[in-house]
Length: 96
View 1 (cartoon, rainbow, N blue to C red):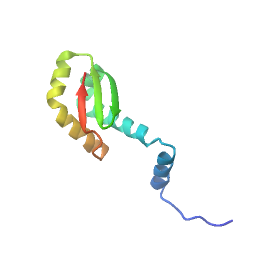
View 2: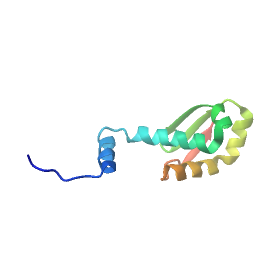
View 3: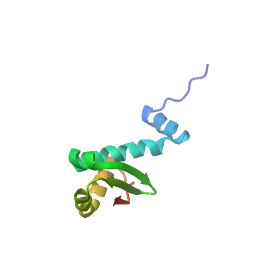
View 4: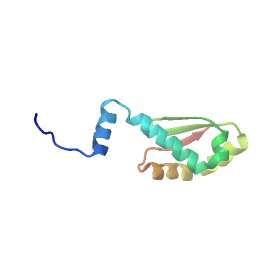
């Protein structure tokens, strides 16, 4: 039996996620967790849905007052999410 080159577990996991197309799902989960952490529990509970496509994070908010407040803070939220995720993945945030 021939000995194989050893690899770091993180590299093996990244190769696996890339090979099976799962990296996007992991990234989406990280974005959702970062959003919840940044906006806090009250705003998070008013968020009824989150989608992420082509760099745009779309959040459905069930309160017009909260939606208006978030619109003014969208850039800070976007920067915070990207900082927590560790890369510039969110290009814009839309609230509906």
